[in-house]
Image (tube, rainbow, N blue to C red; front, side, top):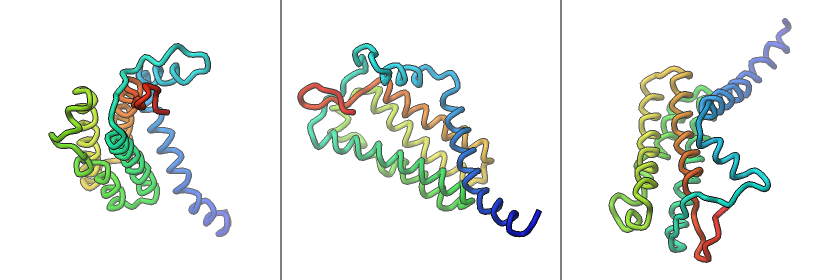
Length: 174
């Protein structure tokens, strides 16, 4: 193998690693989890009415919940990207950015507006991001980290399969 071919392969390795990591995470999450099937059924054309539990919030509450969800998705993306580059400190910081420090409501007004199980699942997910950060810093293996990310995304899937944000007119948030 020539030097140019070897350099090309080495440059491709992080992308290949990221693709493998994403595939492994998807397989971990999708391996027989009922919530995944429920989301797929709800998204299918001609599917039954949306029977997820509606969560009705004032505009500011919806903004806060959606912002937290986007932050957790960005955190997961940051972890995957940093691990693909071999940058564990950045991966740990990305994981923490989805952790308990971003939980907006710690016993305040939002808790009374959200279903108890929704809150419990949300806080469990935030704690999962904190635990992921600790595992990254502790030198956990790639397979262990992928399993943790699979468990985190399974919580996302479960929540999205069970709940929907309702607009003030009662329609579902998409």
